[in-house]
Length: 378
Image (cartoon, rainbow, N blue to C red):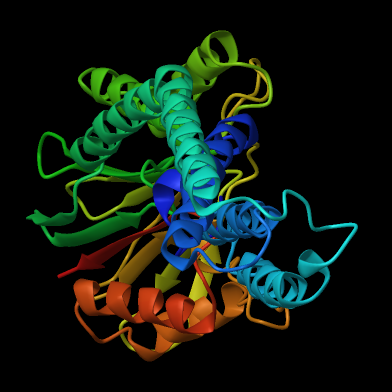
């Protein structure tokens, strides 16, 4: 997943050809300042001085825009253009071979400045029209579609805070961008049973969000038949292998609770379930020998069963919460997250979740979707 950015989103998301066209428009428009300044000055400097001033004004404006679009390091170029331009205008620009069109009368110079200003304004306007016709409409359409996808993600992955039978649930997912590929879901079944799972779709952006939506729909349809976790995983695996492009897969950590307190566990290429006993800080990791969903159509999925005691806590997370890197490129690691959970194991599920997210954010910038499900037995 991409890193979060503080750059202006419109310019940062613009393609290089589109950005080039808008830079040309900005350069032409702001170059007008050189000719307008010459009209107010009307000194003994050659007309070429106005041409150079116009060029410097346009390039300066373009580098400022580049700093918004491609990073503030371009401001160094802006400063360099200003310093070099000031030196050139006060020295070499005033003498041959750089000086030309010297000795123009004030009327001739006024007409030349006015004509040049008009040409640059019209050229800049034309360049902006070209940009709007070729690129701005596409940008608006893309941002509209992305907004719809973002709203879809919020609908498909709502915050979970509920109780079913003897279990309390808290689930939250924070995408790294506007659309995420993580899924946290909870479904109530008959006789105080329940199905809770966390899924992580490979890849980024809208395509991952669409696969995530497909997974949630398929799970909801399958649980109506009260099937086992093994059968559920097999169906999802067959669906993904047949419907999504090669290389796209889904990791999943799923729990199926029964009315008698037993919990079935399925881990498919996902970080292990973290099981904390209420009477200790020790955490047992529970995993099953499975590959991610959508890799091999004929894989037979395995599950295990645990019996959580009173006040025990079960936690499933995605790798985005521990694959976080500090400024020295060191990763947080699963052990650090496990320690946070152990220290907070007597807290409520929502507090445990907050502690984990706070630890990840304090360590480094979010680079991937971050999701977590906390289950507490009464």
